[in-house]
Image 1 (cartoon, rainbow, N blue to C red):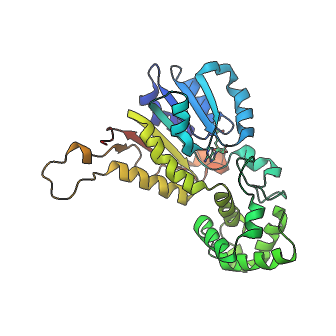
Image 2 (image 1 turned 180 degrees about the horizontal axis):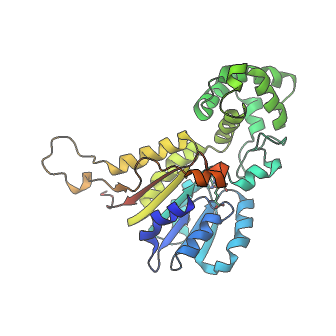
Length: 309
Ligand SMILES: C[S@@+](CC[C@H](N)C(=O)[O-])C[C@H]1O[C@@H](n2cnc3c(N)ncnc32)[C@H](O)[C@@H]1O
């Protein structure tokens, strides 16, 4: 889907002095593709994970001053652009979720397939770990998180088992949680939806990193940073993220005029034009090449009007 992101952003970036922000640098694959495809553009790339910045810094070193890498959470985009004295940008890309590096490095605790300390913080310099969430949150709060962020139908059952177990001994590693979930679920629930621990792990990761609240602030901030004509592309990997992106784009693309006006004045006109019909999905070939791309959803929009303050 990288190619489609690049095509979607292209009309805004094929000009001298264009600035594109990669809000989710990761290992720098998308950033490198942006620099290669748009030779006249400057890249600003953010990641909250210092290890990602270190690795992609080496990868992007050949691009010299065209690439500026910043350790930041993506809802800090307005402050980052202020510091760099960049007033407006022509493109923004989000490739949400965790990177393959984070999943593959067992000791980060994101993967349910390997035993590791239950950390799950993307920025290991701040915040609380997944183990602390499991060991300290009240049962009702854990049920809410599993339902809201994991869409886990068996939340009550799983949380009852967690609370029972943590009283005997606090959680520290992933294998014990995976085993507990497998034992807690009824047979029928185990047969559907892949690994039974998948939804709980997703929910914990979202809670630990405050992912949805950060995204809720970041997408409108990114739209606001766009120049008129500028474009934004967002790749999301679960329905909660995609729903949020869809809502922000739909609100921007709608007129805010009160009903009954014969002519819609400028301040009520839409600020965004949608560039994708619904969400675009990966092709069969893309999924065959990379199984982690299977749940991807791409949405794009173009800024077509200034805000009227
Ligand atoms: C799916 S990966 C991006 C992979 C990247 N496109 C590449 O080509 O390697 C998502 C990255 O976004 C980072 N990330 C997730 N949430 C973030 C946030 N709120 N602020 C900044 N970075 C974030 C993660 O640390 C991770 O490195």
